[in-house]
Image 1: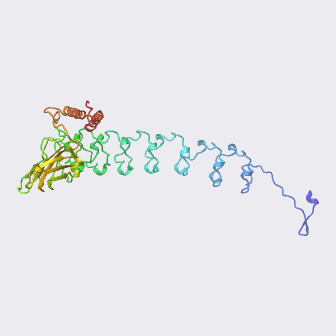
Image 2: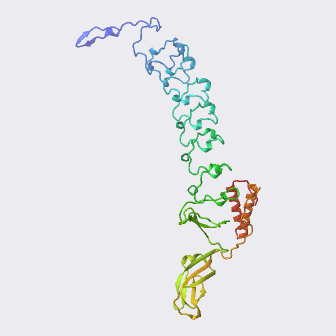
Image 3: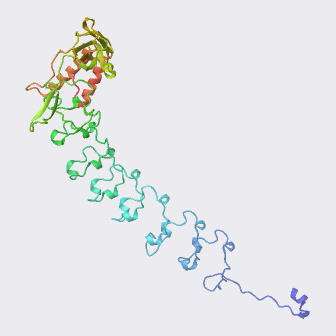
Length: 428
């Protein structure tokens, strides 16, 4: 041997060579093989595919023999672990306690894999459903029925503001019996939420309307055509609002009685003082006053407001001397003045009173004997028949007045009539 030929020199001393110990043959069986030193077998020492299922004895790999995190996801081949290979106590491992948090994701569950038959009774409760997890888009049409909602389970606190809209309420679904007394008050009804189109014909009767006053009527919302008193389009209207514009009427006022000024009698308690307005077969305007001649002559200019609304074609004047003179003569009438002269070429400075009459501008030559009378419902005449006569009467008056756009006005009245009366279309 090489050791017999070479001498070692160590520490300036000559020592004898020692041969290697004899190593017994290693059989690598599971009975008498010596234990391997810790860490002597590592991944790099094991050839790929050297350890397979046929070389592992049943239960030879236990949890105690595997270090923490020794088996990682990247070390397990796809489809290597099947349900048949996972076994514990006679059951496949499926208990909640054996499944780590977030191990089962939505992406891991096949469509339709979770069915009602696989979910135990009452296993899915409110506490197991994340806030906003169930949205309208996730609920199939008609899937939530009254039979699935317990009594009083849906309360006001569970309904989001504006969640229930008119479009979501079926026609006639909400009945009077389902609305508690006084449950719907003015504070709960949005402005303009109830329109004419939402009120059924004859749904609001006289008995359901408390005393109607001007404060309850918005400007422009009520016309004579909308006030119906049974025998005519209105019975009476009492206005208690003060001011110069307590009642505004865009049109004529026809009456069978008088226009009165009525107050409690100032000197006779218990009685009224009633003055009646002057009536005439013309739309008359009046201006009056007092003045004085200057050397037998005087011009009287009309006031601005009188000139603005008067028609000069029918101007007349009456003169009354207040002092001795030869008499007064209406020398001239013009659009903006009259001229008064003393008769007999008198030159006095006599005082006098005057009163001037004319007609309102735009009403010269008005027909005060129009055809037909004001319409009243005849005895025994039903309401629909009378309304048809009233409709025809109004159209006749429009056409009689004429004008280049008369048919357009007829159509506008006709459409307004249908809208305000809410009845089937009447004939034109």
